[in-house]
Amino acid sequence: KCRAVVLISGSGTNLQAFLDAAAREDCDYTVAAVISNKADAYGLTRAQNAGVATEVLSHRDFSDRDSFDQAMAKLIDTYQPDLIILAGFMRILTPDFVRHYSGRMLNIHPSLLPKYQGLHTHQRALDAGDSEHGATVHFVTEELDGGPPVLQAAVPIEAGDTAETLAQRVQVQEHEIYPLVATWFAQGRLKMAGDRAELDGELLPRSGKR
Ligand code: 3YE
Image 1 (cartoon, rainbow, N blue to C red):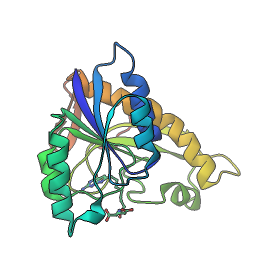
Image 2: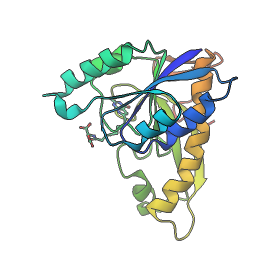
Image 3: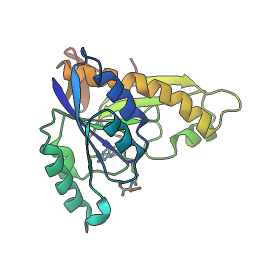
Image 4: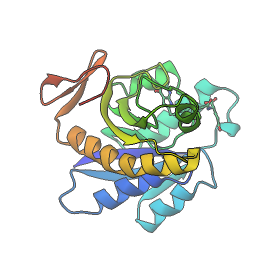
């Protein structure tokens, strides 16, 4: 089976979707470990409840970004992963780290990329008066939220939405599309080919829309 290591910083609702999927015998991947840069992340409890190994590596214990990322890569590699999954992991990763896992690291971003890279995406979509919003799974490259998109899910923005109600609607979709993309990767159907993702030998559009 494909071995995935999941990186988190917080409550880990996307992590839960992976743990639930991986609990099924016919799942093509296994979660080898969950690593958090925050000791109090609730996702660590989710992992323990699922019998999955956990590690905490605090960025505060390192003097700079490079030494933290180097220590993290060393720790991750003890689990011999095929796939690195960022699931609410809130650190910008160094070029060396990104290169080390090039083509085998995924992130999910709560917007219809290339719209709204960065933070506070739900409020920004509301403030812009958008009629839809969503989430994008993408390969991780040096550019924050700028790597090749793999799969997007859109949701309508409804009258009276707040950042919280909208985030909840988007999260339901996140929990569907992220494990699906991991399955594609585990089945060997998904690759990063330059600045595009490739599924079943077909280049996916830069926009992520399918
Ligand atoms: N790094 C690269 N490329 C990517 N990290 C993530 C995706 C992604 C990536 O596509 N190179 C906001 C984090 C952004 C931020 O400024 N974080 C601070 C730390 C804040 C804290 O510790 O609470 C920082 O200095 O990194 C994952 C998503 C990152 C979200």
